[in-house]
Image (cartoon, rainbow, N blue to C red; front, side, top):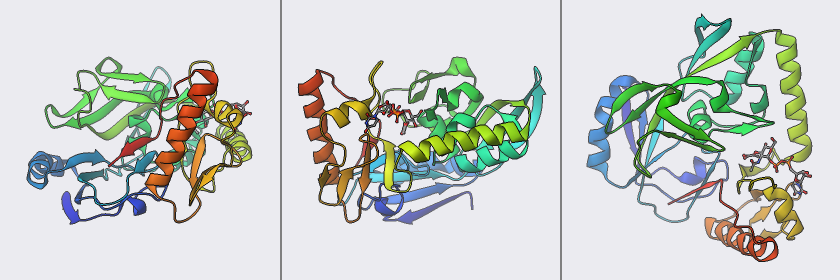
Length: 296
Ligand code: EPU
């Protein structure tokens, strides 16, 4: 079956922050034929569609939610599909896990994704958020992306067909808040030494482990870094490192990570975020922008 529908999924079981109530239904699309039926099912089931990857950048609200989850499970690849200008062209389904793509690249000595070591999530999510760290972002390695929209169907987009910026990706011409599904990404990676690729990934992961609470239930950094500043440093200086409310709290290790220490609620999370935003605004005259996507 290329498309299945299941009722009442719990967002707390689908997100790394482990927050969120029950959505109306979940549509799982695992093959291209399913995309033909997707528009019909979206219409039939109602609710606001939310495309879900690994759920590693979402803060879902508590209670019953008028959301319709759409889970693309295109898990094919990664595969080398060709060569251009001495680089390997690699295709990978959006449902594959990012860490799996990285270990595959390391095994083959393909360089270009090392900065992403330690980022959880799906390949589709990494595209949709333009995930990044250590000076690189997913879009930098990407040559084309295959997306589905209700209006345009399934199509390959080259760099001229999408906008990509710091933690932002959108097909060009998409209306604000418009629905799109990442189906597949094509990357250009540089053949090199497997040992060198592995070593850089190991070093980035070690840096991450030393500075970020990667073992806790978080959604990564909750605020974007303002131009030339670090949201973590600002939140720390405003006294939010380690600040708790109920089961939620800003991590002791890094103030821009909000963690669910057990039994936390979205209401507590949002209250903490609101407080932090106001305090940073008052103290530094900087309006932080959320990186985590609040849904519900
Ligand atoms: N800092 C503090 N206190 C804190 C946290 C950080 O003083 O509580 C200071 C650090 O000591 C350092 C500076 O702030 O001097 C920057 O911190 P860090 O190197 O940890 O990087 P960051 O700017 O907080 C960004 C990305 C991370 C990415 C790292 C590494 C954003 C919002 N954050 O963090 O991305 O992993 O650089 O490249 O862009 C994410 O997007 O979810 C994420 C975790």
